[in-house]
Image (cartoon, rainbow, N blue to C red; front, side, top):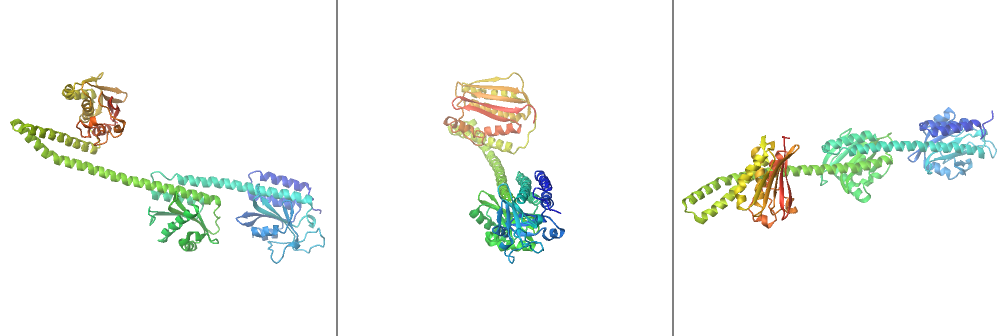
Length: 592
């Protein structure tokens, strides 16, 4: 039987079938088997084999030829460096590499298999030790694998036409591997992107222990690792704060603090990249003091490879992430290492956010405690002052009634009553601060405004002020009559108190949909923008000298706003220094 020639229709057909499969979504193993079978069945070679590069080793993946040959070389592993050495002795036939038998030393050359027959004494005959290789390349020229053939047609060194057709099979095999790797890389990016996104989404108000446990489980499932360990340290870095593992518990001892220090040193020297730990590599020494401890842990648990990534925020190392795989598991890819580095940054951010929230919670609790102490102190002191002050006022009034006190008694009465007003407001401020809710009933804001104006009428006439009330009818809301009356009295009283003689005060009561308002506008001294920022703070007094000359406690507006907010409303201000002010009480018509 005559072997197929280079132009064999069967060879062309097999090449076409291979090209069709390469450009479809067929599995890589199927395409590579089609390639080697095409070389054997379509081009007439006795044996064809394809090795795929894994790391720095070629792994025999597809073999066509006799069954005993397939069994002998399938899965055979060859260091790529050995094949490159053989390339150095080869004749270059395009992308093919032909190494005649006389150029290789049989004592130093390793063969997965070689044919067993006597060579023919003919310069064009194929010698059993001749080798014909072809590197399988990506479009960018990166080596992806290797194709080797043996026992060419008619037992002769392939002719130029035969080599050209073989080259076409080689090119298609390289494209098949490149396409498959691109698909795997894309799927890997999607998978790893999902892992990073899932970890990033674990923040919020969740407990830190819960966040770390969820992150460990996500990384275990998403990266397909044997064990995940997450450990964070207190802000001093002197002790382990939290540690979680998945599926097993996080283990360690005092030496884990040294590991944090080693990682911090490494970040300072080389940045935040993860450290890759492999049994047959010397990366362990990057971790200095803890290298031997980690190696012993790997030996004890049977781990083959691991990653240790610092959890960083800026240049600060807050903890570390450890991942491990057993022997037989796939090695960590560069994409996985990059994803773990990103996860380390995200977990560092989550840790920092959790610490900030914890500090905020502690500070808020302390402030609330201080506020309670302040309220209790104000109430206690005010009550203690109230009793002796009442006695002072009573005796001063008796002296005035007897006509024996004179000017001194009048001065005592003025000061005592001023102090009494301050204590009364302190007690009111303490009461409204501690009051969680109010007793509601129908309250007519127009009636409250009219009562307040009547109360202030004598003071207004004495100052030559015009005070007007504008309201079209009752404006009824649900609230506490006494408390809302206190707010209206305060804003009306301030308008009268801070308006110069001859000025005007207008009180407008209205409702707008589901809210009611009491707006008090005056032509008084006005309030600066700086003072408006702190106007409703307790004990605040204006920086305006005109306002400071008028007695006040600095509590009235703080009490008024607190009461308004207990009702679901507010007190608002619009003012311009020297032009007057408008204070508006806003309350919902119905209870919120």
